[in-house]
Length: 184
Image (cartoon, rainbow, N blue to C red; front, side, top):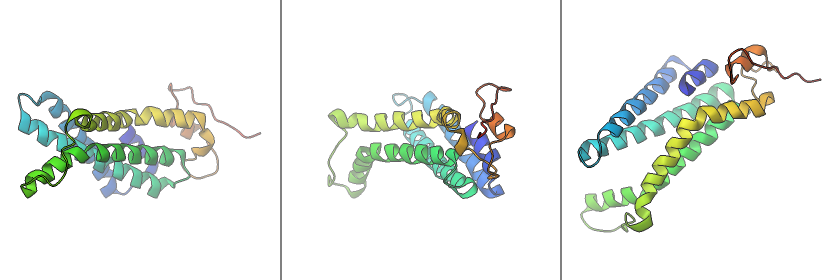
């Protein structure tokens, strides 16, 4: 829903709309297949699908943030929330990947140049980053709804200076219950 909402609100170019939709599709398909291909039974598929869904996840958030900022401006609440979620989720995933990157680099160069942080508490870094980044991803739409509900004055989507009924309806928690905030 978040991808369709961003595309509807921002009205990006045909190319960026397709990239936005396809990055979400690749993320969803690879994530479902990753959940099916457990590490103990399909270790290679699990590893490849992990890289696929995290790569698609990163690409999706970068495209989402770019679309929001380019098409709606940075002063819009949707752009602010999306940018914060994109940066935080991507940052968490990048930090959590450091132990795995060190192991991969050691394998590529043939000797242990980088420390093995995949022991003890470091072995949970990737799992924590994956869980944190995905929680933000899955929670982005509810976070956006709450932000617009709390700060409707910053949700002027068509930049006409007013928060009209059509804009309010996009973010109503229940259809038909949109309230328009008016300044008195």
